Image 1 (tube, one colour):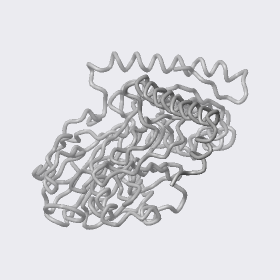
Image 2: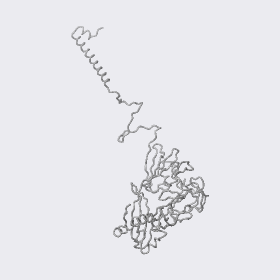
Image 3: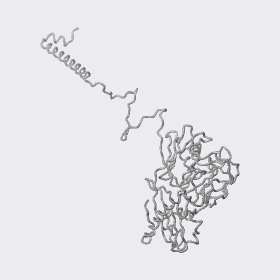
Image 4: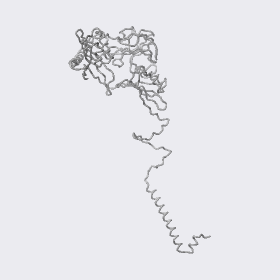
Amino acid sequence: MASRREKRAASNPESANILFRRANQCRLALLVLACAVCLAAWLWPRGQVSTVPDVASPPVVTPSSSSSIAPLPRSPEQPEVAVDEAWVIQAGDTLSGIFSQRNIDVATMNAVLAADQELLALDVLKPGNTLYFEQAPTSGELLSLSLNVHPGKTIHYRRLPDGSFEFAEEIKPSRWQQDVFSAQIRGSFYASASQTGLTDGEILQAQRILEERVNFQRDIHKNDLFEIVLSREMVDAGATGQTRIEAIRLQGAKLAQSAFLHSDGNYYNGNGESLSRAFLRRPTQRNYRVSSPFNLRRLHPVTKRIAPHHGVDFAMPVGTPVLSTGDGVVSRIGNHPYAGRYIEIEHPGHFKTRYLHLSQVQVERGQRVSRGERIALSGNTGRSTGPHLHFELHVNNRPVDPLTAYIPTATHIPANEMPVFRNRVAALMAVMDNSEQLAASMEPNVHGAGG
């Protein structure tokens, strides 16, 4: 059956021609469009990246300091990025309390203390020091701990694969800046010295240097003059807080005393005579066997790792009397989980001794002791392989071998060292003479001498 359009076309030839032309135009338009699509596909650049993400391979993000794109999640095989945080020590802080607040377990703290046995740096935390914690962000595991003792010294404790820790000391290059503090006595020596800017510790050190020659209560009179040459340790970041007295001179109608620091760390008068008694080499009455010598590359008998041994171990029965090897003041008494009971003594000059693994302490902190005085009984406390005494000698805050170190064991500087000592005395006297001339016309009586 024919459609109406076909019937109209059959009855009207003109209408049939119009329909035929329109059909041809549509076919031509479709042909042109198809050709255009084919040409565009042929001309499209080869290797063009699709704008549709490939779910099989995620896009690569190039890190950039200005990029705000969040990093992709890490796979379990990739190590976590450690989180570093600082903790400034405040009065009353304890290591156990700090570790607890940071959710670090006791076992980890003990592992750090085991590494700290040779240093005992963490046993007494000082306000103002800073601890730096490096912890894994997910587990909170302690990866490393750093103690900033002062701007020139940082101690690092690093976790080893077996969970133990090792330590390393970072000592920055330093220089010593010399100053002269001088004044006439107005009242007491302490009050006059304090007005020049010297700290209590520095004044006490000066008194200890000359205490066997000068009674600071009876021998110091009004208008007597004192001069102290003091050096402060400096690094690029500023003062470390470490100081040393290079020379002292006291002058008056009935007073003439001086002290000069020699290269052995002891103080002598201008003639090279020692101002304090010589040191003992050993802290015992008898010569006990050395069971473990001073060795910075020692194989630790318990951990079996290479670790510094900052002292000498003497094998001796528990309860053997332990003697102070020199005159000094007890500066620390502690009970360390690995060092055991211990005593630290500061001596005139730049000497410090330590006595570890004691069974009994027989002195108190702040007590003055003399060379050869009994201070404790040896023991086997802390981590120890047997009864023994661990003895350390530090010169200028660095451990040395107490059996071989160059220390004052005589009452006079050896003859072959006197020429160098006399030159040093002459240089220091010139510095003090210059300060004395300036002191007559300047107030306050403190003058930098360069250095």
